Image (cartoon, rainbow, N blue to C red):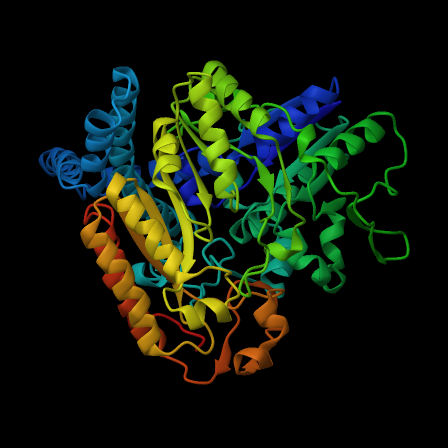
Length: 589
């Protein structure tokens, strides 16, 4: 049977390298069946199309002379060179690999070349983001309807602001927007703009299964529009939409039953076994309604949610990235490898990972797959795409890489809950680990405990001192604005990060603003955090950040000012985006 796997718009960051969901599903289907699997990353194709639309519009309007065009190109190249020269990481890279740890020369060369290319693509990504916004305005004919700053939502990740079009309203989706999308007779410009032959693989009246992966809230509207587009070409197509977003909205399906007129079923858990079973049964014309883990509408217009069976992640094989050559990514040789599902800590009050049961793969399997990915796909850098990897497991991965004499650059996420001995950190660096990322969240012990982070600040300080001695690169994330946190405690976290950014060239820190997500512990137990009111938001199908009232609330603009002090120091001016909350944009607060 023909199985099509799609990744819909709009995730601008995924233009850098392919998101792993399609590669995981494709690999599982190919390893366990003879189905004909076709993979297409519509997201990256649409982004590149928006860039072309924006650039072409600039040429048609003669807004830029050839002299200015080449001046801009030279300026960008100068930015890249300056960002490399003044980068905090380049010194760490050179020092660590040539002076301290005596890396093999070609790994050092690989690391430095990857770093230079990464810097170049950071500049390119900013240019692409600007073109995406301009391209969207041109494509949807809203040049005069929405000003540039209104759609900064795409760039600032500020969920307080909204736009009318579902693709521009980056963090929210209303029921009215979905109804408008479903009932509109006008073809969606997202897919018609890609050309009449773009979906050549869809055949009318042919038995075909379409799996649409929705990894981010920003994709759901486009996924529904894509399903509608597919049904228009092939009315007999079977369409399933899955991904982590579905479990956040599955309780809303009864309010919009019309969705099931174009989507046959939804999946809110891991989709490998489900998609395989759907393909097997549909290919044989067998009934599929009893498959565990699917959500569908029965003949009595009742939403049926079949209980899922936990997927064994150890059944996953080597990700299938063969489709990457058919798309234009900024860093196609930088790939993701999933080594676990969920978070082993799984207790943070602000997080929704508690919806996932933690499952992980063995160290031996992880390293074997890293080696195969390097050989098969010629990748130079691997992201272990986990919520968090225990430090002891990171050291085991590093030791096995060293024993196998495998040359690769890699990175992952971990927690600062345990002490990182210098000897173990040296081995991690020797294995090719480029940097480690951590979620500190708050440098104030009271707030950290309130978040139930399970981290001792004294241990954090010891670990960061170790990183400083080794010049080991790390990225530290923090959150301010947690309910009950005072402005003084926010400044404490910002000052803490700033001190380490100044003293350690390998440390990068960034601060985001707390958002109240549905199904998090804070949302379900507001009284414990002094929250007196949470908006109902009944008109929203999903909402990234619920408005609420709490004691000692600090104005949003003031929190952004505290955060930017850290963010600006951590990032090169070439890659830092300075537009934040500005007046004149529609706010719901």
